[in-house]
Length: 447
Image (cartoon, rainbow, N blue to C red; front, side, top):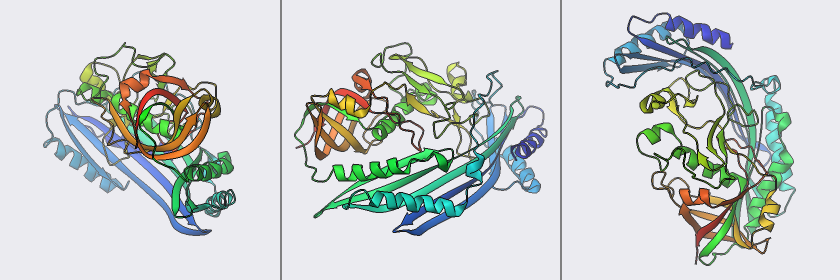
């Protein structure tokens, strides 16, 4: 099927006129979304879509148009509309399409036939089984919803600059949201499991995490203000890395909207910190072989042993700063043009699990969840202040639950104050992997 999409893209590019750069991006995808509540299917969606986006650049002006069909007549209309839209574009000296850069595609097993053939009834049963397992862990736990989701995507891209590539990938995950009751008090929790096929799910682990997260916070109180060492839960670390990724975005850097502007080669983190964006790691839920412009996805080391090595770029942001694309064009589908961003971010892990990390903390907090992460963080100044909940750590032991407090520092200081990185890598349905992370000297503001 991907080759059929490639033929469509090739035919469009073959119609380029003199002086035009033409890009055709064609995709076909399907997704399933199931939500179960009290053993019954509460929500079910199975959807398919296909379409084409055509980008034309002429004399520094860009025109774009798309259609949610691959009908030949519609494609002809899209091509004509993209040409018309060029006339309304603003001249941009850096406008241009990606060009082949000689980087080979890393062969990965991104398509799983077992998932493609997996029956709908079995998908529903997975969500029901996850709910049953969770309810059997603790009588105080209720399930808010139990979910199964999968997606399959086939894409092809062709350009007049010489790019001609296609690929396909699929993946799935289950998730569950929980509530724990104790008298008049209710706390929430969640759990995940991801895989290239349902055979890779660990339902028992997802159920236990969801129950533990909710019950651990029962009886939580507001703590006194002080400076502490925090141990970030893997899910919180993944969210934290998502914020860090915005500061390593080449487009943001070129516009002066990153705290790391002009800091290449500087020590910006503890030497134990190595941060990579590696979509060639098939364990990552967002692993891929191609970026949104058809260049090979690749492993990029952004921070190496504490030293800032580089930023992520698509062809446009790279052109603005006189660099090369790092294969980090991101695209939401055929309806839009490429942006730039990290694809699969990960801290190189340590060797010890969370319990061992906690055992070395005399006075701290195990941060289980945060709120307001995006509104409470400034990627330009680095100011960091978010709401949180978690568990007190005293002399290496996890103790009483606490909530309604904030943790504050700066992103610059937090990276330098990393004490240890756990070995408990948690692959999540997001663009960053989770791992327990110990950071010292954080301001906790409570009562």
